[in-house]
Length: 387
Length: 138
Image (cartoon, rainbow over all chains, first blue to last red; front, side, top):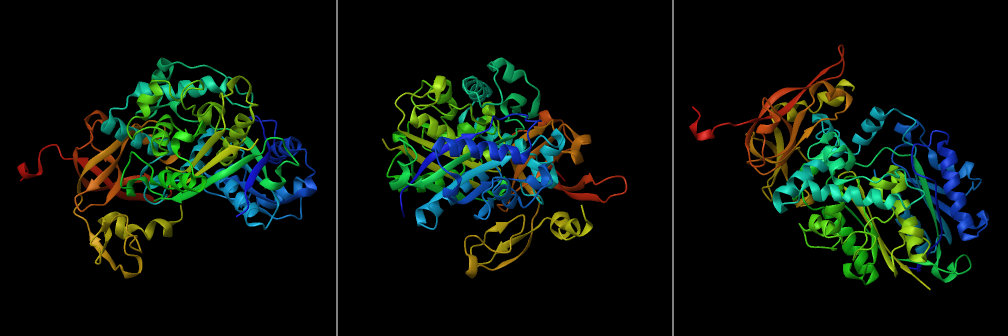
């Protein structure tokens, strides 16, 4: 396989973008990425777009055609990828494979979700469709409920506390304040998190990612051509994807995600790197417990110690291994299909040294971790700066 | 929801019938068509489950989907059945504070939700706390 690098990145602001349509959002993100790469649109050979459910959120399917059309890039092939919240991560992976294989040279990986054109209740219903409809949603499970079941079990097995989980949200909100693209720019305290209304115990409102509009885009090129477009190519040195049961109750364990572990194993192996080589990571914190379980399964700490290392400050921007310096899904926002791509945007900015006030020092190797549903899909990418 | 989608699940949901692989002896609920351990050499047959088990984890749902709004707060649990498989079910007939990890439960047949006043009524499994040890019951 050819070596592949990111040569341009861009995203919209994340938030309730009431004055911006689906098609405007994807074009804004795409234009920023193309300008970042200093590239002509004619160079682009194909597009992969992660999107969970334009059908439910804006009643529009066939978005691949819509995007190719309105970006002015038709007739190039455009393919929509869906894997719930991992849609963006999978789009990146497919784009990497397309460039790596030599089928295309310059490929766009994008992600988008327009969630606020329906009322909050309908967005929650749409989100619930990522679970097993016959055996989870049928009995009253919601998306946060699945993570609440993991959280309770994690507390039971390892003594993880509600305060430790709250600290994940406090940290990610703090980081988001330093990110102009983030949805939330408010600091929160542990007490505020603990006293926010219960959603699904033990998870409270300030522990769950919000409903967000947003789009993100990265441009991939063969590493050998990357310097035509950027002084600092960000090579994708590792990639792994894995599946697990769609229903949470079918898993052997409720406190780890086999899909994350398998995807990480494949990515580390491809990169020839170990967890301790990683300088920073953007991981899936759709709820606070998700980040705790993710950093354990990615090998950044021992199983069961995710809460404790968070409390000890390991995951802060100035900690030993900064996690979600962008603000994560909690602080930056979680436009489902865009999340996996936005994580790659953040890692690219960090590795290029362009992350401003939230810059992680001496960052050379970054990792993204994106899961779908309660972990039925996971995808991990490892990036390395090529000076 | 259209009736056939609900109707075709009735045998399994009402009677707690899963599948058992005669090759590896593993029991699955909800039922599966292919044994993930044995695949082509597997041989799955229907398997009625007793409905006794214990709570592996639980949550109290305060923000519910439209169909369940009138039921909040309700307890949702993952139950490990005696025969091995796990299922997700509400824990009913109790105060949420009474539920704890490890609590013994039995599956009962209950109303799950209604589509609307004119729509179909969905039935299925819910769990009930066994407040005394099964051996002490007559």
